[in-house]
Amino acid sequence: MAESNHDGAEEGDSQLLSTLPTRQGMWKPFFLYRGCWLTPRSVTSVALVQSQFTPRPDDVFLATYPKCGTTWLKALAFAIANRTVHPIVSGSGAHPLLTTHPQDLVPFLELPHRDVHPIADLDKLPSPRLLSTHMPPSLLPPGVPALGCRVVYLCREPKDVFVSTWHYMNKVGEGFHIDMGASFELFCEGMTLCGPLWEHYLGYWNQSVAEPDRVLFLKYDEMMADTTKHVRMLAKFLRVPFTDEEVSDGAVEEIVSLCSFETLKSLPVNSSGVSDRIGGMPMENSSYFRAGKVGDWKTHLTEEMAKRLDGIVEEKLRGSGLTF
Ligand code: A3P
Image: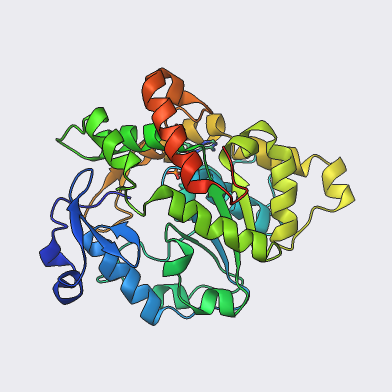
């Protein structure tokens, strides 16, 4: 989600950017593109995806607001969808998740930035494609809903999203410290990358209510509480349900265990090394695995901060049926 310090307005599409409202975000100026706050290069990349990406009816998109568990969802969906080609044989050491970072097993639509990394790379992938995105539904190419492409959306308790984002930015934003109080203010104002958070959540929530067979809406917190149930739900939605035989052989539990925070975090491929997945900003592979807890906000936010964010989120989501 973070980008290079060189990612100034001059590196985006300056003509497009000059037409957009702009404000200082957590670590650089953000631009409001069709209701969504993005960095300059993200605006350019998202605009290129909209105009150049060709969806296929059997594409499945894993959509998340940043820090809601994208890495986990990628691991789970990959393991579920590819379990015939890549069976999980305990102790064999052969599964791709043991040697490849989950972020690299399911490519992002808009990353690495499409100004330099061609969208045509996605055209080369065989069907059915598993792709991921941080874009709100309003910024996805219009062909995605029109063709009936399915979407799995994963959201998370907003206070935990804030805390996770703050830690992440302080870890990956080399050389600068982001003040918690100032970033909390921005978060409360909806001034976050891909924000406002509640607009992102509501966009997919409303689609899942209208088209439950096309958009599966999941919550990190519920998935942590009963991962097995969610893995079965995901498999059904991906149209590769577990057979009775697989269930009795423990295939569901094997996937849950392989994709667990503890397992993934401890693998050398995820705990060491640096990769550049954004374009111009190498990051430690370990930065995607921190605490992996529900309710970690309790150790970081004051009661007052928690109450304030709860109030804002409650008001923004009122009447939608979505609650936290
Ligand atoms: P914390 O910072 O609260 O620990 P994203 O993948 O969207 O960037 O989200 C990162 C968050 O998901 C981090 O939260 C990270 O620790 C957590 N996470 C990563 N892998 C996970 C897993 N396998 N199970 C549960 N949580 C995971």
